Length: 77
Image (tube, rainbow, N blue to C red; front, side, top):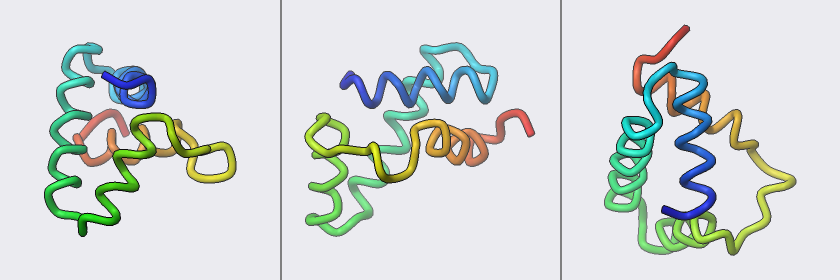
């Protein structure tokens, strides 16, 4: 798992209150779904972000992304 995916999974586990292994599985399911549904160019950009080839310092924070994903997964409110 890439560092970004690991960070997202750890944040999801913390914010949603689920075990880290379940959070990792959830992140993988959601990311694979997105990659299948997104246009190839956008999917490629997602892969670039996940591989650490994009600077996220001026965009959405991982806390925000984890919170959004946690809400989708029905976590703590």
